[in-house]
Image 1: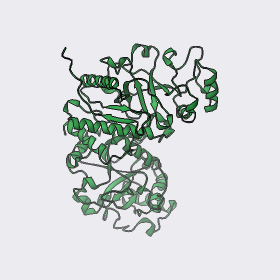
Image 2: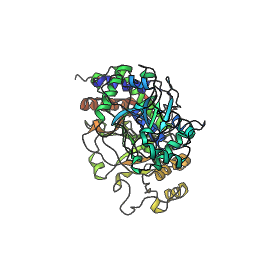
Image 3: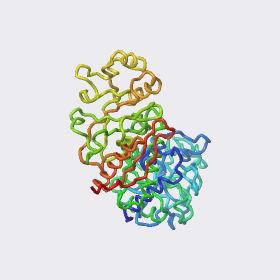
Image 4: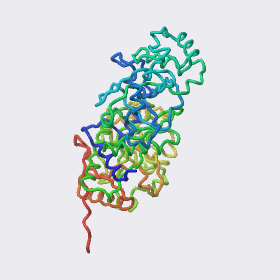
Length: 525
């Protein structure tokens, strides 16, 4: 197995390669963006691509079980694959309907229409596992050397009759054109034995050249059931051979969503990092923060969750508690009122002021931290929640905005003007959280506060390494930097893990700026 440091550095290298001002990912590492892409393709059931080519060029997921995960070149076609001119994959998509994979660990390819160093070619397709290792060149049989449509299998009735007579292992094959590939998906609803639909289909791809792992459209490794150790073997082999990180995703076909990602090691040991490596991590964090700040989607795909699951930046000022050796813990008053106050920064939220000189920044909520945080409520303005019960409402006004008939920006503004001592709260659903942002976006000039307020429920004490702590921040002042460095040193001392410091400037174009770590001066008096 690779040493942990090498795996961390390889993940970092993959994360930084080709980074743009607003990178194409919104998650803490490449695994998160891979899962989002896989979920999107799985749920895309278009029968063909916009250019009229077969669906596998733009949607669905091509997945291959690997029999021997200890093979250090598992990505190569085997001698048997080369001899029979075919490498077997399965194609999974929301309308394919299978619940079982060919194996509990293997590899996943990108959609075949994506730009890649080594393009792959589909040779033939079967609605069910077709025992292609015993076929003529992986596709035909001695009885049926030609594709199905050539022998008159062209619709559901003719296919059902053919399949019933010859079973899956002796049937004809479908050409990999848009029409017949889609037909191979549709006929899965018409198996003579319905139970067959639970099992995988088969897509045969022509063998590719040996020993070119970095040129292949390898998107991820997968596991299901007890296959995680196998996937990790393959991950280590791939990183050893290429110097590139490849994520592992969990596949559960009977759940929704089907794809899941859990980072293997979430953070980097500080004691093993050089200053240059720390700087690389800090710069990558800044890129992520900027990307999420500029991402103004009102909800998160694919299931429409509230925006804070995938975009925006959660910022908390620590005006007193920065000097605590456990500054990451909720304090007693926050526990008593069941709420910790944050600001939600996003380009359209018009945050003109971040109160305080230093504090913490949390990752987006889909970052799969080991300690999941929970949003309690949201306010378009600073709501002075210290005096509120459960941090969201007052005892004599327990209702949310929507239950108070505050359903849009105009009714909220009217409510806001008439209730100077109290602002109703928005529930943290996609619709109402977005309305809290839109009020600031469209009516900032009518608000008496330069920032909003989002209440997060108190988390477990004394678990800094499990929290989705992404960075520390300061306001650009010397006092703020001293506070941030104090927190950084205490976090590293407590956990052995590095956490970067960023400067927040709400009035600048980039907003977030990385500040290299420098040890605090020692007091010898």
